[in-house]
Every structure is written in C-alpha cells, then in structure tokens.
Length: 346
Ligand SMILES: *Cc1c(COP(=O)(O)O)cnc(C)c1O
Image (spheres, helix red, strand yellow):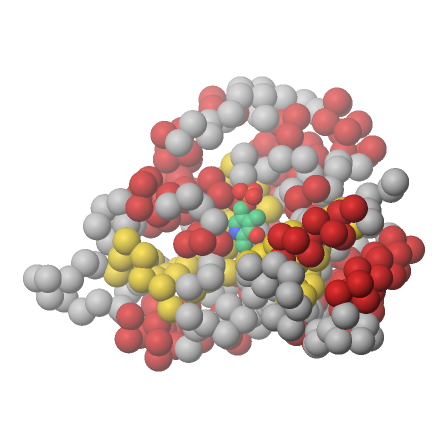
C-alpha cells in the first residue's frame, strides 16, 4: 500500500538537484570559517531575510535556543505565545540552556494584543525578573499554520521595543507566510531583531536552519553555537542543499497551500465534519474530533491502516500537513479515505 504521508513537511526528501549539489559542494572547516558553501548560504540567507548576517545551524530548535541564549541573561523572563513552539516543543530549553523563565500569553492564531505584551513586561522592582525577550512565531504551528501580517508583527514588536525589549521571530515557516500573504519576506522579518527560519521542512533541504540578525548579534551567536555543539566542520555538504532550498523551493510553496486548501474543502464537504478552509492559509489543516467518540490517536491509527498518515495535535485534534512530496491525486485520495473512516464512525 502506498502511504500518503501528511504528518509533517519535515518528511520531505531532498531533490535530485540537491543531492548532486551536495556531492559536488566545495567545502572547508566551518569552525575556522573556511567553508565557502556555508558562507555563500549565510550571505544569501541574510540577504533574503533582510538582516546583516546569518548563521547556519543544524536545526530550527538549535536556532531558536541559540537566539534566546544570545539575547537574554540568566533569570530573565521571556514573553511567548502560550502555544508557541519555543515554549511547547523545545524540551524546556529556555529554562535549561538559558536559565530563563517563560511568561506566556494566550494569543489568537499567534497574535498577541500589544496591550497584553506591554502588561507582561516587568517594571523595575527588586522582586521582579528582568524582561529579556519577546518571541513571535510565523507561521504559527499549533494554530494550524496561521500567518501574522507585517502590520501585526510590527504592532507586537513595537510594544516590546518601546520598553527596550528585543524581539526574536521563530520563522521556521516564514516563507510559507510570505507566499500566502503575497509579501516580500523582509516585511515580515523587519520588525524582529533576530529571525530563525528552516531550510528543511517545506523547502526540502535534508538538514538545517538559519539564524539571522545584526552582525554583532551573529558574532555572539556563533560563539554560543560552538558552546551548544553546533560548530560543524565540512557543513558545506549540507549548505549546498540549503542554497537550492532558498533559490528554487520558495515559490513552489504556493502549490502546498493549494493542496491544503483542497484538503480543507474536501474535509468541509464530509457530512458531520466542520472545517473552515479560511482558517488554514498555508500548508496545514487541523481537524477537530470533538463530536466523535474516538481520540485523535485512535483516529490517526485508523487512517494509517488505510494508508493516510496524520499527526495527533492533541487528544481531540488531528493535523495534516501538505508538502512537495504529496501531489494533487494523493490529496484527493486522502480525502476519500478520511471520508470513509468518518463514515465508519457515524
Ligand atoms: C519545526 C519548528 C521548529 C524547530 O525546527 P526543527 O528543525 O524541527 O528543530 C521551530 N519552530 C517552529 C514553529 C517549528 O514549526
């Protein structure tokens, strides 16, 4: 049975062109800053995202944690959206690696009201921690790949900057947001002091993310990357695929968004399911099972026996993610299979 893998865009495989570029990559020791391919990728990444400099890191998680470590001091408080990846999915790294404590704000599709942010920023008081950082996330993963507009991003960042608090943007899928909004990605990154984005996931590189910011920030982050064990040697082999991800794989994200729209519309047409396609502007669709007797894990297992792989997002919600390695025919087949499984429940 052919599996239709909609668990995540992290399952994408490198393209033949990426594999060729990896085999042919010119390399050197990047800890000595002698890898020309890594340098080329960092320069291109910085330019595309509109920051002075960028640093290649093995994963998005390392890029985010490195950003926090570089921005804050031990004992600082970091303001984050309550369902954000940095808070929810990064193994407590905020506390463990940076010695920071989290101050979470529940948002709406990743957006936190500027007043909420200002309210959370600590005044000077002998009892209080210092507010060291505000983190934003675009697209917002747990909200279903929702997007923050340039205006929303600026409003939130301004609230922090007015009080001297720097801003980090977890832009793991920032190019999905830019494509969905039809804006230059720089409009989305400009309000933030640092930005992390993934070359893996939808862009298809096998490994790697970039952390971007000012020159002086990246100098500090480079040293912290060494501390975390992220100083790599001939990593140009990986960067070669990253270059293709940035140069050739961004525009095609629109196709993934089209497929997610098809999927959401298909689900909305299944009797008994309530899905609003407009809630999912990028490459994710979330299906709520509130009305059904099964848990998300049980539903995911049933889908799997019929050849569709999805992820349980919570007890009662399932997430589907479209990506370059699923085509329109497979999306239609997935809709048919999901309809069958739902029918079995009714
Ligand atoms: C995937 C993801 C990350 C982490 O990236 P990894 O490469 O999986 O470590 C960070 N933030 C968000 C929003 C993500 O979706």
